[in-house]
Image (cartoon, rainbow, N blue to C red; front, side, top):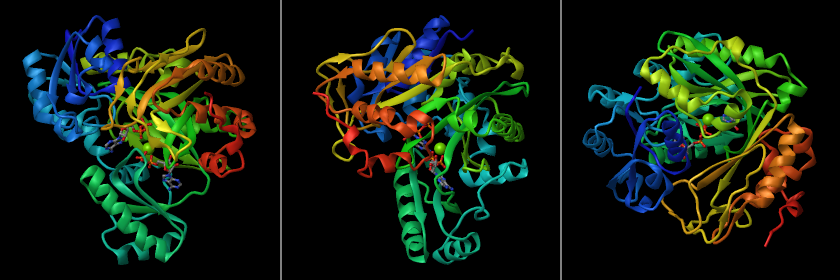
Length: 460
Ligand code: ADP
Ligand code: ADP
Ligand code: MG
């Protein structure tokens, strides 16, 4: 077993990884920026090393400083979490060349799926359907116009390095295409240091359904069912559930079909560790590959609750070289799990970030309730990073029970001093269409469109 792991991340995911390490009797090293000195991951790790100033470009993205910290602390492995360096093949290579195990996919798999355009091509090769689109990069306005004409409007212009819903623009005609082309490029340059974009058909009001996969170093790959992440605002997930109501109620055959497609693609990439194959699905049940997230995902806990598999521990065991001790037939989604992302944002003010000091903090508990969070009373949410301060996960024997528990748990969750998305999550849960399990990625816009604004009420 590893003796010591460095967690190259912050916030709730750093806490989540440290928890898994503790249960496996592995010592942990936290790294932190000056803005995170009093963060929970620093307090619960066995050791903590400051790696620089608040901006992530000066700390959590500094490969040199993270490697120095790993060498000083003499760790066996690094867990990168999500975001930051988690999908950076160069970082993974440097870890390995310093004799530090990178807890994530092999560099072979990372390179095969390096960006979205490359992944799309691999999916095609694997016989996995992709939305009609450009062959690789689109490098000029002219090229964009030719492609859009061929594909037919509406289209999406997407950054090949994109993530977190950024670097993406919809276009419905030539004028918005040219505008969107430049906007997507410059947003991607700013966010990812890579302005490459491609174009694909915009699938209208689709469902976002993704498959969790696990692969070991011996070529065994399984999937752990799907997650429905169609509840999104600006292409960013805000609530996720498993199983997917669309699959359960309308397209039962999709689980097998999409699961097989996900595995086929993962096999082509020689995928190892935990990963997610994302798809969009239209109402008729046609599915299209979107991208592979080569890391642990924010919404991984719902899969853990519904399958009983600890995905972070699996990542650690796989990095050690252990074979998967699970086969596809061992995996079943039992019951129903939902996650609500609690962000430090003001839902009454266009979701403006709301950093600051948390005065009072009470996290819900009771049967079927899990909270993954680094927040506590007296903690100051720094303005420099993403606004996720906690994830509330509920588990029930069926969807109805999971929803009732979520509603109850949200009503107990008390965070004062800053604004949070808790009231907005409550509004989603009360919506009749959500309750019926009938929703697409257009759901939140419809909810915010005014019709159901009445449901979002300030609590205190
Ligand atoms: P998930 O797919 O796990 O739901 P999100 O898209 O919400 O993840 O992203 C999780 C975090 O990782 C966010 O902080 C997001 O900004 C960051 N992130 C995701 N993809 C990238 C990327 N390509 N580059 C940089 N940061 C990213
Ligand atoms: P990111 O890397 O930011 O997560 P994705 O490619 O996974 O980007 O897309 C994020 C979300 O954007 C999807 O869940 C979906 O709601 C929307 N989206 C992306 N591509 C398309 C498309 N071709 N048609 C319709 N919606 C799309
Ligand atoms: Mg995605």
